[in-house]
Image 1 (cartoon, rainbow, N blue to C red):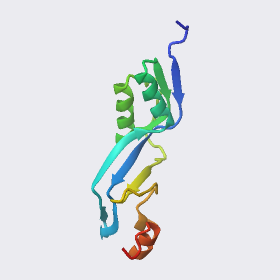
Image 2: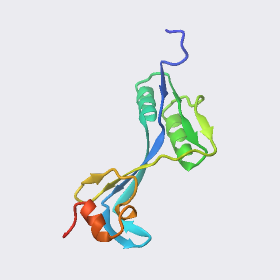
Image 3: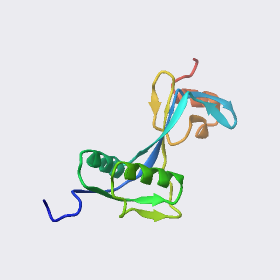
Image 4: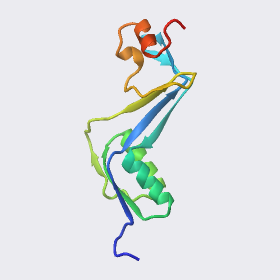
Length: 136
């Protein structure tokens, strides 16, 4: 037995992935799009490594920044459920939020864009060209 309290300390990114499946690139209205489903999953290299290490039975802790919001709470809860020590997590009231979304059409093509297609283009046809659905 080593003299260390933890076998593994993971340092790095903690985030929540937003995955949208069956995304239809044609807007339903100015306010939204149609999709088959959407999920939120915790992730980031530090979170993934810490959860994997804890599942292997290693005494694991994580050092990362979390926001004092629902996403931060979701990440912390997942870490604690997996048995990861969160004593070194730094919680901040205001953090620059990094988000990543994966948009997938019904044909399972994915675009890891940070925003839906028409949010960065001015017309539905431009969005369809970007998504490879022009003329369909």
